[in-house]
Length: 271
Image (tube, rainbow, N blue to C red; front, side, top):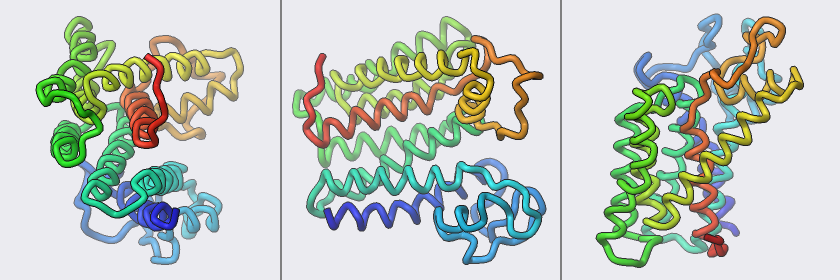
């Protein structure tokens, strides 16, 4: 349990860094001081304390009082919780622990970036798949033949690749298939496809909730899954339909992480 607290605390720090990576990727260098996205004012160190500073400022910039995205505390808390769960599941420090934490961090970064930009960076998907492949060799969750593990990635990615190919990218992005490749290698030939199926179930539930005839429920859920601010949406002006663009990456991440945790904690999964 003590290891879980240590990992959780470290996760808060890593989560803060992930926010920087998510916001600056493809836009600016990771170097340099953080500044307000609205007024450009440099942020003091005491306003950069994970979660605490956002709560103390009530989600607003100290200088211009503009809203600060709830993404910041959510990513930090999610990373802390993920690291804590990984730490508790391992019980003792071994070679797998830093690799597992890195995998969790990649999942969170990819999911959050996809929510914000509806795209998964190729280099992130490839780095995630490579990290998972190395981890599966050092500390495999799957104990069957190596050939089956090697094939687990392509098997998990194949349905999403087919959807992308058939639809010309309208139903599914190719980045989702690349992410599924790493998920298959992480979970093995049996539970990899299970996690992919679980992502479709989660996506269906969220999509139905978005389409419910409850304006404020639809407003908040749509803002959450598309990464758009609440203030920028107006239910009376914007109609949310089955054609609304919803990123699939977060559903893949959620389903894969849940399946992964159940396996780490030796919870029986019905098939």
